Image 1 (tube, helix red, strand yellow):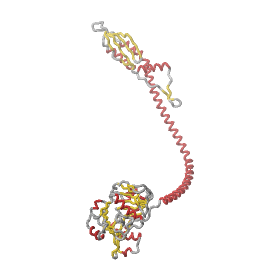
Image 2 (cartoon, rainbow, N blue to C red; image 1 turned 45 degrees about the vertical axis):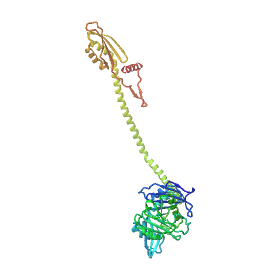
Image 3 (spheres, one colour; image 1 turned 90 degrees about the vertical axis):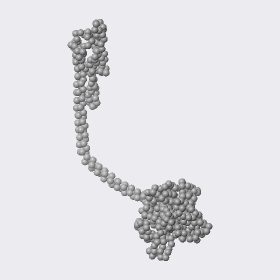
Image 4 (cartoon, rainbow, N blue to C red; image 1 turned 120 degrees about the vertical axis):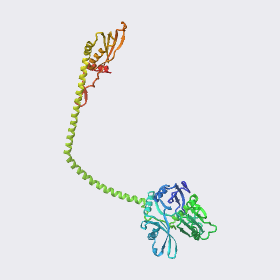
Length: 496
């Protein structure tokens, strides 16, 4: 069933939650106890099998809007049984005392400790000295958890009960049909219930046998007696499969019309304030939101006052201790400052020493480079005069940025000794001699003489500029004469 809305829109004050192993339903009612009517019905899919009752109830209530509501829970999760007890054991007992006595009797079947039990009961009848009570039972801790969970949504838990055995006619739950007799057989997964009314007073018979066991049929027929003429016995079940096990006018709660009629009958019964079924009623409902907020506000104000006073005392003590600590830390702070300054000066000294070493190294590189530059041309002339072979003549020497050309006229095309000797003189000076380009003039039989073109390229690497730290610890380039700058720029262009 999807969210179904029935009747006029109104604020619902009473809510029924129907929880089984495979259904979660929330039904909101309006109209009060005299004429409850369904306002809205919500249904969720199959709930998780491992979830506890508190979680399922929270999920079912959350299907609709939050708000202040009286909540009744119909669930098959309760332990339900018939407990016979001798009247002498319960004479004069009622309320919690009766629930405690029945808890001891029910413990053998339910396994719930009577001191940890929440129990609801309804007297089914008496047989001689024996009374038979219809009992529904659960753990008291689970009941408290349910209350707290609903209270978070502003819901107040008014009672829990088994969904079987509503003692009202589903056709006229308000009793408008008067003393008209009716019978209804209810088949639930764990038990069979027989409900009937012959003189305007309903009676209930509980058979604690699963419907799948056929042994209940005879007991149910004996209890109902003769069928009512003109009013066929109804057979109600939450699951259509269970209806196949009974007889009568079939009513499945999986059908919307039947579900609404059944929920309305329960609303009439529970809101009347005198339900004729075992209802587990919370002993101590959760504190009202307004009262909880008032107590919380009072506690908060008290705590704030104490904390404020404590804070004032602590601040005064803190101020005094801080003053004493500051006086004790003055010498320490002075020593710390001196040590910091010493460390800074040592770091600066190490830095200056490193800069000095770098400057000396760079100065050496510049001195070596300038020395080679000053000697190159003179050394070239000396090398040419000492390396020129008798069969060759240097005809011209030309120089341009980055390149020097030697042009020679030779009677021999191969003057390897000349190139070897000349390279030996030029390489230490940063010059590199390339193999010559030859051109034969064809004036002799062997093709000679030959014009030889040699290319000489500088191989010097220009060192970086020299810098020294200024008084402000910033590097400053050493100013150089304009002629030296021009020579350096020309040398850089030659190298590149």
